[in-house]
Amino acid sequence: MDSATWTTLLGPALGVAGALLGVWLGAWSGQQAQREARLMEDRHEERRTRLAAYSNYLASLRRLRGYIQVGNPAVTIVEDPTISIGFVAYLPDEGQEHVRALHDAQARVYLILGPDTVVMSRALRVHEAIWLLARARSTRPSETLPMDLVTRARKAEESFVRAVHEDLARYSRLPSAS
Image: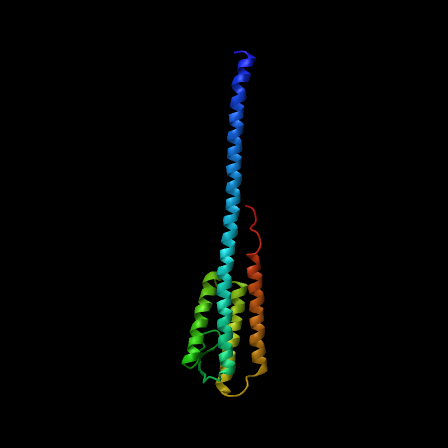
């Protein structure tokens, strides 16, 4: 074969190969863009799930704290050295609804995070502060609660909110390329 024949044969072959390479690169590029979009959507969904759990937990805490502070419930305390706080507080029926809501919300946060996270440890501090308010209410049925306990509960709540903000901020960032 002479050089003209090779040129005649190679020209179209190289054109087809170039077109196939372009199609492959376009498909690969599109696949990468879809993958990144899917990862971003997954991160946003995870953030929405966490935000809903945190919001529900915080709202449940605040309802229970408000009930204990303002509702003047008749709180019964039973000492129990087997639990970390050392006692169990029993509230009247309407208070038990707040307690159940809090436990449900806390379970959701626990399932999302697991036990060993900053957010969960801060959530447990708020939980403990609320129960200390309940204990104080048991000895002061119609009096104002000690300000140091109210302040402790509010500071624990603020600390929880800061930890939540830090956790949610991680889901606002773009995922790292891998």
